[in-house]
Amino acid sequence: MSDLPRLDLEAVGAAATALRSLFEPTPLQQNAYLSARCGAEIWLKREDLSPVRSYKIRGAFNAMRKSLDAQPERRNFVCASAGNHAQGVAYACRHFGTRGVIFMPVTTPQQKIGKTQAFGAGQVEIRLIGDYFDETLRAAMEFCAAEGARFLPPFDDPDIIEGQATCALEILAQMPDGRAPDLLILPVGGGGLSSGSTAVFRQRAPETAIRYVEPEGAPSLRTALERDHPVRLDKVDNFVDGAAVAQIGARNFELLRGVDPAHVALAPENRICATMLDILNTEGFVFEPAGALAVDALRDFGDLSGKRVVAVVSGGNFDFERLPDVKERALRWEGLKKYYILRLPQRPGALRDFLAILGPDDDITRFEYLKKSARNFGSVLLGIESRKQGAFADLESRMTEAGFVFQDITEDAVITSLVV
Image (cartoon, rainbow, N blue to C red; front, side):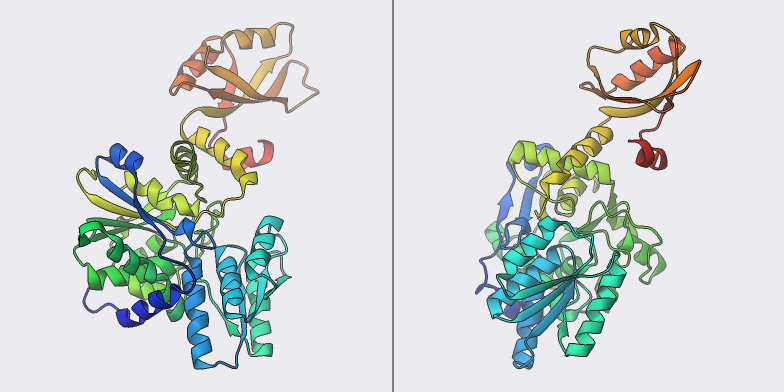
């Protein structure tokens, strides 16, 4: 891979030094719970503990710093983002005392708008334009052209990549006894963190194996590697909003070109939810879905016994209004919750007969007639939770033996989106 693009590590080091005016290196913590579970030495790089609770501040700060050094008179900065990049830009604007205009879709939750305003501390203006991000981005670019402002992309920019790469320099400096990890696990969205960190490790610690993880519903890196060029995905699942990107950045891909597609894990969204709850309940750490990617992927890369592993936690900006949905998805992944459409006879005692076949660990959480005017049979939406894994196979056997007709719709995204 010697012919792959390289980063100027002196420039990355300068960016890391400059960042110290903003915050100290984020912690690299050995995690006893995960280490015991994996039989390995598991370290977490806690980017969720940066001032804006994500690594995005690194790239925003570096791009703004270098722009101001080159053109001190140009003090207007613009970005289009409804997430962590917007917050990083806002915080950097406050630090440098510059003006920032942040374009967000009209549908952006008020919680994200409020946090961005708070981080900007009066230095940023938020403009809500467009129902979809493409409209928002177009408005931001038109504004930049008209005002002569500096646009700050979220990932596909050399100064942004250079800033995100400081995370990798910190990891190598923080490793106890100076020994590099055997394995580095990087989450991937647009590729800023993953491309910059990969370049640093290739140059400073080539003995470290690097693995990557994307949301299953947004495999932009793996698709690009398989086709040897960036590809815009036709469909993206936006649940893991911090990493659900339709196309890997062009510059980012050039730094990642040559990665084996088999080294990119695709994490199911529901499994990520189970990991988020597990970490919250055992360690008290609040990870956003994208922030949990690397921890979730610890199970995807074979036997880790005896290895020194670093997983990068990319962010912790989690809106707790999403917690019920996360719990729901986690239960479904763990096989503890199912949805059925049940054909229930319209006769006295039919419901009592059905309830009699439920097990001691089964609990009805949803019961709703879908067709109110049925004469002989009624279609019922049925949600059931169980405290025991494997209980649903026994329940379905009892339902069949009792003559009940049912359809398991738990994994039918079309039906569940309409009725659940």
